[in-house]
Length: 345
Ligand SMILES: NC(=O)c1ccc[n+]([C@@H]2O[C@H](COP(=O)([O-])OP(=O)(O)OC[C@H]3O[C@@H](n4cnc5c(N)ncnc54)[C@H](OP(=O)(O)O)[C@@H]3O)[C@@H](O)[C@H]2O)c1
Image (cartoon, rainbow, N blue to C red; front, side):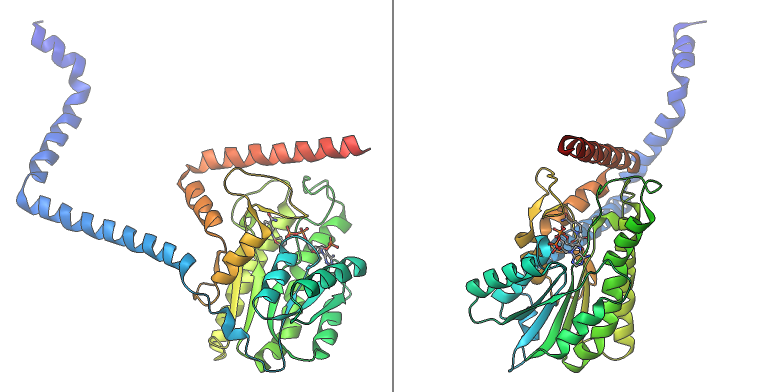
């Protein structure tokens, strides 16, 4: 066997790919192929640039929130779970933007303290409170309807904020959750906001234009261990928001009642003390970003640009890598919580 034959035998597995590469290269060198590549490339880059510009614009465009501040006798917003965390931030920022706020919570002392603090900060606003335990299934939302009916002005904004893991421990296997804990999670995150929206919709329709903001969570879209019931309720809130928006449009109210579900990622609050580098934000930042989104025509979206960038970056990861990362993160959170509980005993 001469040298050439020996070489051919050794490298013949490369022969077929090399042959096709040569053919493709020859084809690509023709004028038609180069023109087609240039046109397709320009379209792809143009679309990417358009999407990027649209993304930036969606975070810097002026909000149309003030459209809802239209009642001479006072425009009211109701914020559920307003005594802490993101709910308190909603109440603060809405007062700042000219709305009177009905604060909902389960703890009368905490409610009065927040009311006092906000009244001192915004002396021109009227604040009121209503107590109702959202985790119960005996129609606690009725108390909010009764209170709304007594307001001196008109209700124009409903913020369905109350929720979270709301049980202790927050991270546990679904099988380990007590039936009463599962009910607490389902009632607080799903039953209460869905029932409350149904009760208040006729009032919002009468007082139109009106706005409904629902608090969603990124847990709805990723498989998050140790939070199965909670994640499920957030998926429900997304589906509920989408359907309600479509229904209002069907009923000719699409322009009068805006409905939005804000997807929330890690945000510092009473219920979430965990930190993720770069992407964890303060409740105030989240709320200001979210109010900036009012009027942009999107139904489900991230309220803050940092959370949107995080979702984009995470979306670039291969599925298995992302899953592995999420599982590690959640194992760690569960272990940290268990350690804290053990220390406090
Ligand atoms: N923080 C995050 O990273 C994050 C991420 C994704 C989604 N979210 C969503 O954002 C919303 C707010 O979360 P957060 O982190 O601000 O929660 P948080 O800090 O735990 O505050 C929850 C608020 O709801 C109230 N609340 C809890 N259970 C209640 C009940 N049974 N009846 C009446 N009021 C009740 C709390 O009252 P007390 O003061 O009496 O406890 C508090 O005012 C939730 O819908 C949550 O799912 C948050």
